[in-house]
Image (cartoon, rainbow over all chains, first blue to last red; front, top):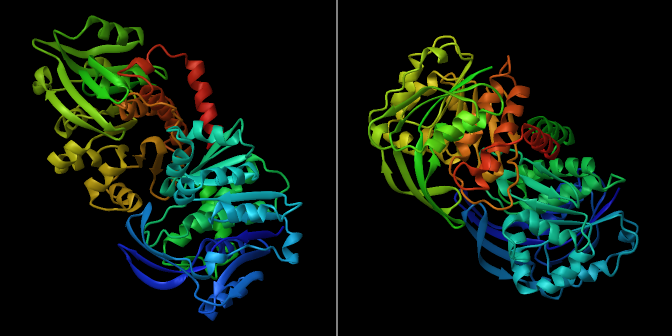
Length: 296
Length: 296
């Protein structure tokens, strides 16, 4: 019933057509862990600098996220700055790795007995390092991005060979496989041993492709997007936390996981930084998942 | 159980990244009528010139399309030529109205007792002219395009006020309403009196918006698009022909109608001109609709 999330924790400066935030809470593990926290015990593994705001740590604590795997290192926290010209792709203005440059993820003893693992969007070499530390995990998933696909596709392939679930968007799956059809692309990834390839399509939802089956799921509708940063991380975090409660990786479990992921991703993009996903009412989340089931 | 389709019948010269055809069978009514023919009695109302190929007329006959409303006029058939740079939008290279310039649709007596009407994509003034001729139709739908939205939005609004169902794509609904959110846009159209707004999203399927409800539906997957011309017409033709068999315009009926529309649209785009939608096996269509139900 428990999920370990390994990824980045950072401070984001983001500009969108709807506004701007400076040094706001961000990072793949931050988004994923907050969303995961609504569905079961959540453990975060990452690194922050001495300048990381106390309010950011408090936020994780109030969401009952276990911080045994959170290291504080001398120096500054990882920082990213981006500007959205359209909602699907940010232009990176700057990336300051800071303490993240020497990040070497170590699972603390409390994470050894966890059930599921989400390798959020970080360097595939770090993802492999985590995979070498786990033993009896039930479900293991990884997320990635265009940057790693271009930089180190071989290491990414090594990660993919060792996970049950891959989260990837349409552009990325085409880039990674060199195939135009997302269906042919997903089949080629399933041949590497992955059980489910979840192809994310932004506002159009997702298609989850299995060996001999597939299913489509709509996105939860959003009237006004403000900041798409972290949508994929929220999706993956909620998805994996729900899945950690399930015994079988079947279509029914995956369908529900996708719905929980879609609701959290939608709530996230309606506000800047993590504002849309904090202090949520679990009953409200269930209601939205139920709506989404009726709308599909 | 019968459907009247009023629209264009023409000869298309089309270039896509997958090839080219010259003077191939086309026109909104042609595509829609062939697709409609698989689900119930279909009547076509349109005009052709003396040069229209006999094979094109034979094709409608072999699909049992009633031709009482098909006029042959002296002169050349309507011709359209377009080139696709991407799959969502064609650049029009030329439009020769020919006999279509003086088209004044007249419903023959045999169409007076029909059940449903599809006003396929033609000038809203002609659509209004048809609406003035009908009396007891059960379901009336209209399709349109960016060209008419720009040219004569007021006449289009008059049409929309008088139909039950509007077919429109994402760009068009934003253009017509001036609203960025397709949900807000659809609500503003429902206020005009429409029961269902079917917002088409190409390869991402559709969202059908009702007064107090909505549902998403995936597109039937296509591995290789060859020619997207007529996809919307096929969708509308199959949708309305299925709907003509139903008593209530409820969510269940609409969901099924969308599935039939999606399957025919997908078959259409896999081949040039009408090649993908002719001589189909109704059992195969049912099988694909069943697949689509399982995939959603």
